[in-house]
Length: 299
Image (cartoon, rainbow, N blue to C red; front, side, top):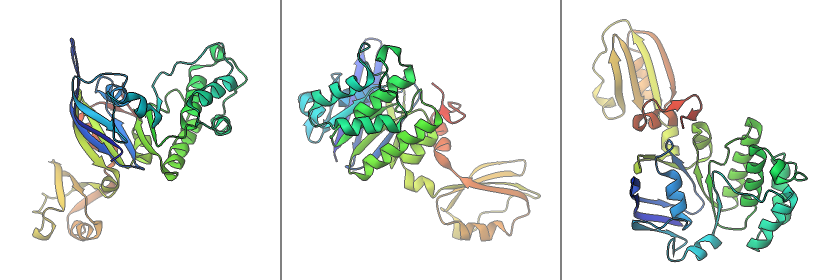
């Protein structure tokens, strides 16, 4: 694994920001972090890039300890913080050239190309840029780095839908080029679209890991019956779960092939039925009930 943590913990006098976090990220994976503010996502990312010293446990990137070998780690990582600091008196083009020069391996032409794809006016001074424009500038500087790992904290924040789509395309292109991406976001559909695996954090603890391919195979069937629900046939035991059953309104979930289940459903006294993918929202709300609002997780 290209990124590993073992019992990674960060405590402050006021409380624990991250507790006993153990995870691994495979090379070439888009790995999602989900959770509301205060869940520990940004703390985890700052520990990975060596900006914070862990209270306990360890983290490694490309075999380098994130605390003891933080300079080596940063040679392997391009980090986009949620609120990137930029030089206010520089024009956008000059800022991109500066960031490419200090990294050395960065391609200024690629940075300019990414900025163009993000519809960013590089002639403006940073001090006259909107929050969204500054974020585009930081994205262009980050995603043009020739490193194996991108760590992106809220990469689509403050962007309009068209530019958000462009960012997701850039993430997919980076993965296709063999890059590893850690993608922290509040926007569930975006995480669902680009990530291979997702972990959910709650109050500083890793509470769930979800493989997205497995999730895409799961379905929820909601039905209204005209008679009481019969017993599930023995051959479907373990393949379907009743998650709600009240007043002849029934909800099942299944991660198996639908045809055997549909054959049984066709024998039931159905008034109506709806089948839909379970989706990441349903998984998220198991751990953060009421925290999903529209397409974004409440902050």
